[in-house]
Length: 479
Image (cartoon, rainbow, N blue to C red; front, side, top):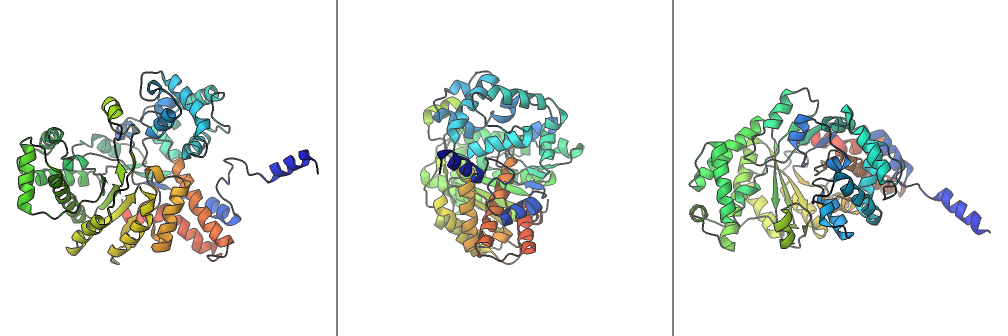
């Protein structure tokens, strides 16, 4: 047999990259994706999109403006590839920054960035090729021409992917003026705030915390001189967020905080830090524990859903943090053991029957089964899937990470009640990640059918896919 024949035969069997059946390995998976998953709208219940950009709905200057600004995933890869900081967060031109990213893309092979990059270029701009230094100018010109049009403004980009609801991430001191503006406009997409009160418990730095107290006092109209004042001010802002449509909180925590404390201790700790005195580690943990508990009570009272993103060790590079600031690509997975404190925190609220709907996102894949079993302890039959194991987050929102999360949930809980995917992104073309997730979900189920592990009942499977992609989130959040 000739070598030429072997090569041709191999190419006949080789699956093309990023074709219409990308990731889908079986006929059942293809059927589920094409006939069930694709048609479902998107509820993006956690993201970092700018409400100002949505409200103003202005055209992006160019592809770098849309795609690279604020994307620490890409910056991290570029630095690893030997690209100078000038082309990441520095003063290089937008074209120079894009060109350096294009030169980096071939080196991201087998990194999820390679998939996301090409999915976004194909789904939004119709680019069928591979991005590299040779195609950079072609992609730049193609995308920039489309970005001049109405359809490629922020609202248009979301409509393009059938986005129904977006929940941004907002500090309690935020005016929410852009959410209010959007609600009064003719925007077809519901854009709601999410309460992110991390700064109100960030007592590691007395000076920064007191600056935040001044800001919170100003917006709430309540002078904060005691712990009771702090809670009053936060409750006032919580009420305001609710009026504007907020129904979720979100907490970025290193670990769950559930230290024992007395009310008098917290008052003393608060007085100490308001006096500008730095707290010791025990006092910090007790104060955070008190605040996390109080936030839980606020959410339960209003019927909100509380979200916890835990397990990151942040800002590891002090030199570059001081130069570039947070959220610029210097965070990692933490190996902290949070199991006992997670249980204690959830149990403390449940004991008083004040545990709100809860979604837990972990960052360490070694704790997938931990979370999957923990959520089962606090399901009470009142709401399907009341306590949720959140989708693969941050370093885990890629193919193997999402498969691991769904497998753990399947084995130890009810995947059918899962509220599905979110973007967790700052970019308006990251909705390809929902497509990515849906393909992975359909492929898991399709493989199980083909291997005789679950029945070939397409009505049952189709309903399950539609629920995870959309219906569960719609019924759970009730926006």
